[in-house]
Length: 498
Ligand SMILES: [Zn+2]
Image 1: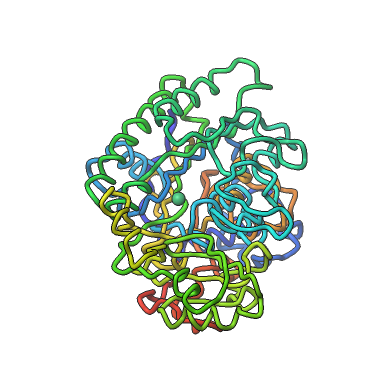
Image 2 (image 1 turned 135 degrees about the vertical axis):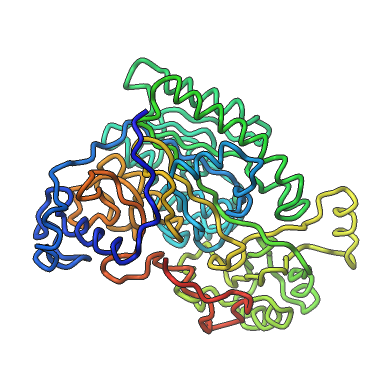
């Protein structure tokens, strides 16, 4: 395959400068005026110094994008030298130091954010389990009828791009547009990841372009299961990742032997991290003891309370806070987190890292029994999305992704715009993330940060927003900020944009 020479770490000042050029359209041959000035200043501001950098090279959209999610996998998990394929992807591709999940840092909300580019309050899958006021209970449902924002499969289909999904929340059937992934499977957690790799390669082998997907999304078990059972970074988690690393290697080898890697970009992400559980609380029992009739939906770091009598909200909040849990009436949840959707229930609970909400019941006997049978909770997520322990992974590899490029921190919201940009498609205004790679797009008038390098035509990845907006546009901003209600985990350090 054709591969660009490894790039050294780019000095931030140079990086900003080149990004400004890209943002102003100098790189893609689009005039600054065309952009409407949303983010980057005018080309005139930068003209002159960058004249010799300009080139009329325009990056062709990639042929295929494969988006793999490894559930509950942390950046530190993939740094193990015992994972050779991951090591290669990081060495030869671009990787983020962290992918900041959306609120809540749980599997279902984040998988939907990864493919819709909007936060959970907007796409509606606000937790793995929640109540819809009209429709009733959602519990680990994979069909798109729960989605309130359009996912990639449907957006791409509008542009004639066929997609396939091997397990992804919201992929099992067509979205309301009538469009969806052409190929999908009904979720079964027992399916070996080997089978997914074989299916992905078989899809790519399809002769008929009306059948052959150009966008494939697939879910791997990642480190989630052993992370919950045995704790993050446990030997069991590493063993599980080693087996998946082998399968990832088969996928990469399959792309190489087919000669597809030069036109394919493989993006590996995860939905959230995992934190070690130091103590457990049982908010349901506390509510019960106080005579507050409620349903508690969720466990670990995040839960939703649906009250029988909404007038109990203030008491429920008080009670949870007295147990060391951040709690808000839904309408008081800090906007940086975002709970403006009735599916968030009456009261929202978020435990600090180290604390897991469980249903102990009967003086803890339920939990003791669970521990005996090996399903006790030693790892949890759902905590503050900007906490470092909740960080997921992001690696992009293949085609002309510059080798060894470090992206710093990225957001789960950046992934959908990145996929659209790679296909050269417009990014809907509703998506607030930034494309991390990909060529110029003409339709939105928004400057494409991370568009092609003016000099080389290679994609730029990441870097600070030229407009000076916060890079991640949201949840991570809460660290250290006094929340309007409830404690912000004191362990969360301040973070700076890369
Ligand atoms: Zn997960």
